[in-house]
Length: 121
Image (tube, rainbow, N blue to C red):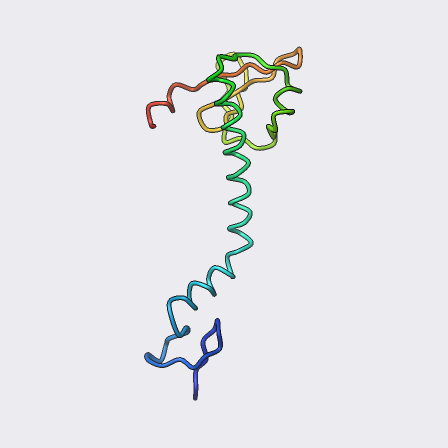
């Protein structure tokens, strides 16, 4: 019985348990199978990097408070963050890697750098 490559359909020569005619076909096949899940992860990672860049730029400019609408206008997406830290007095900071913020009552955002993560760079 003639075996066919799962990617290109060419005849396979060699071991009886081979499924692909070459490494390129094996990579093509697996990349095609994982494309949807990889695209989702890639898109989420891109949004997290963009959010981090926005917070880092504001922090580098010396800003410690900014209006929520201004942050939104810069392209910040409030739905994507890496983690939340709640202080002992109940204040929640949303972090995008080492840069965080908390929403204040007057629609302003207080920015914060978590010094714990700066040492890892």
